Length: 154
Image 1: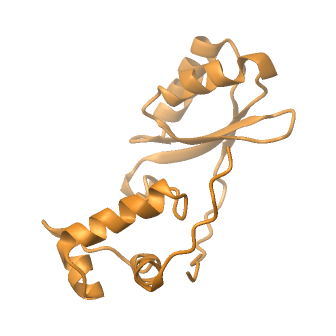
Image 2 (image 1 turned 90 degrees about the horizontal axis):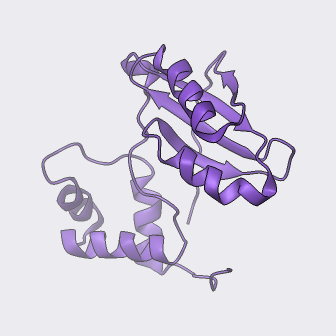
């Protein structure tokens, strides 16, 4: 299903542009972010919800660097039979270690990221997914990390 094109107004554009550069770590982060934007806390929360519902943003939340905290990430892929794709996606997404999951038009048609508190948990999570689905999970562990400052101007 295709959503109608949403064109953010000037306030929504300010929100999108501003919040890509940081979000306060405080007991009332939305209140602080809203004040910085000249908005009320409830208005900011409402506008973020609206941007998400309209598809202007797909998610709003922190990006946690599990590796910096002693954890690990691993990109994984599976070749899922077309007729089982939705059921397997549901099985995979049920694992708390799955950070996100997406479909590709390729023989390896399901890709997801495992994020764990400790590096040794990656293998356990991948094996558990293999047992649950009956399908092989290919592991592509991170070899080197690059930081890019990806920003979108609204």
